Image 1: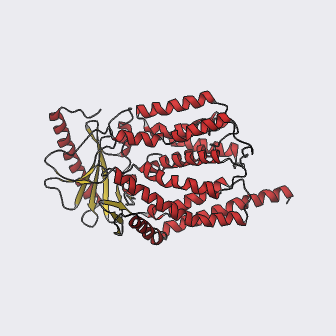
Image 2: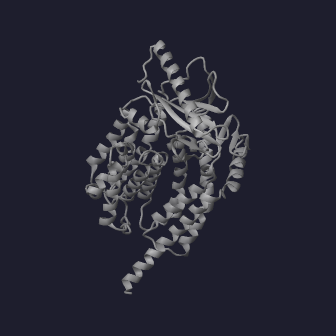
Image 3: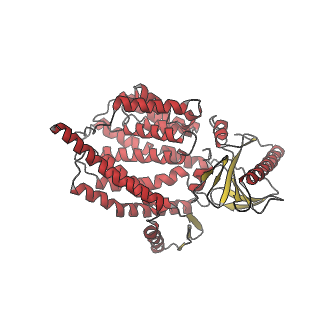
Length: 477
């Protein structure tokens, strides 16, 4: 073996070994929740030190009037994995030595600290905006943003300027926060792969050469916010001129993959196949990514510094627009004559006349103009992990209960999330109402549950439409 081949072989091994550590921890995360026994007492203690009455209720933390669901995400192991993976990625052009491994080990207490700060941020947000809760995107963003200062301290900056590294990290955090809630939607897997490949081609250049493109990008962000077309936020972020590789975007694979980062494109026939074809072509043409060239050791060019300082606040525009739109939410309460008990997140637990005691009904109003998320995302974000039921495409289970969702949108009952996405394609369409039905698994078969849930959904839709017609209110804005 030649010297160059041996050097390349050792370089690959140095890169693969840290990723192997991260993969091993990922497998551990799937089998054991090892972080909760450390994180939960620390979070509870921190809240009590801050003067907030907090108690551990097992699956939830009770903090005054707030109930915060406790999931594996709250434990912090997922944040640890993300932190380690980001560190390995940012150090892919560095030589791995004893210091690098010590930094990787130091990510364990760093992840614990970041997660405690994340939970405290969520508690503060829910306290200020009670009874509303943060959107899934905001939920993930809180955790990812606390990783940014840790990575800036942990990763060597011999080849990177602090400002460019900060911009890249905040950009990546915003992209991942938008991606996390939509991985379970139609075309979630190819969409995720497309986003990751596009993000891998986002890196701060040495100088600013596309001022006109940057101005157009800024303007487009405010247009998207005004038009309330949230599906365009992902490609908008990935097309940021101060980070995106313009040469790669002009290639066939780059153009296709950026288009496929928009969730709505995966509703088109053959979109998933087109994505996989573009991925295969990109891997064949580009091969393994080479270590990036570092930014010159001198100061960044002034136009680039100004563009980065302007771009970083705009990375938060998708989330700020979502929060701002909540103040303009159209109220869609349950029909009168139905017993309704308020639950967190602009929701109600309903009790219809003649409803079986083995079935529960949840009614969620829209929060702003952002469309509702899938049943899987909504409940995972509230501490419940769902799996599909074999033979029943529309039914999910957590092992103890059956779950099914419907939507009341545009004056009709929408039975699936795919149909709901199609119904809300028009900009400024009302998100409508998200109905979630829950049945006791031991009390009924999935067939009986599906029949009962469908009948209740039909009754709710009939009552809802009749009351809105009497009140002279249309079904869309």
